[in-house]
Image 1: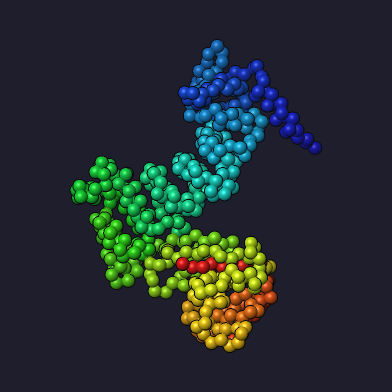
Image 2: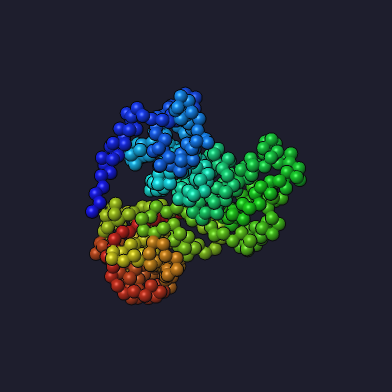
Length: 471
């Protein structure tokens, strides 16, 4: 049987790194005031790094008094200290290292061909919450797209920006990002930005990237036909990524129309048909961007499906819906009384329910609210009342990301769209979908006030419940 004693080996090698007098390499790292010398052993460096194996070969080295002198001005002393500790001891602690330095460590470990360290640092970065990198997004992007094998970081950076798109898009850093990064951002459905802001900044980025235009102070009156042609060439691949159907007619007239010359003719004609004739474009077929929702129950991709069910006539309203969380069972408590206290009054509301022992999700949309709505309908008695709505619906998803097996049941008896009853938290259509005895969800549609598409007569125990006011 083989016994392994890595702990003592690491300890002994640390003594070699910190106290040995038999070193044969002096490595100078950093520049100017931030410059430092490290002493090391060529045999260990060559064994642990393919880069040093080549760089310290006899044909590359510079010697002074039988000592190998090696310069790495592009790596800072702090970063190289971490790398040496890893090389000698196989240890690394990133808990007290700044985001900026971790990104520099990623670049350095890639340059020195230390694959294990590179993979560890990349995994560490992508395990952090998305706001961890916000202060260093530009550096992170430059790092991610400089390193072609750093796909995890590329995706992580894009996800981070999509969480807080506006602050990055309006920043100065946006105007200097690479076109590959810009393309990846604009094609994302979950980019959290107003589409006219994306258009404005795209134009500014294009002007910045087009030689000669930036010198005209963005004054279109001074542009020649050749200037428009040059800008068109710069932005040609990005124009189809703009969701023109999310831009209002007034914004189109003031901000899109002046740049007619840079938009492909067929796309521009389709945009005009959309605004003047309400004909949806065929060339620019990307769907509206998904708006962020503070939900622990569903993923953003399902929000678009729900919004499409809500939205019927306003073709460019999809992107303008906002979901404000007003009740979450895991925070406020799951009970009829709590639901009624948090979710009362006339409002456009969405309720989502995750049930126990299943991935299944149920929900309902009410254009009028859930209870204590008003006195606009028949008061049957002191404890119950029906309310009218022609827009309400209930639905189900198989899981938090399911886009294939969703089911929707529209209200068919408008006079009984919502049943306001003291014994329930909410009740769509008198027993179609209702919360009862504080923690149970009934889905049976016994009175057929909604379409019978959910096809269930089960009683579920509620694991999580959320309610949103929709603006």
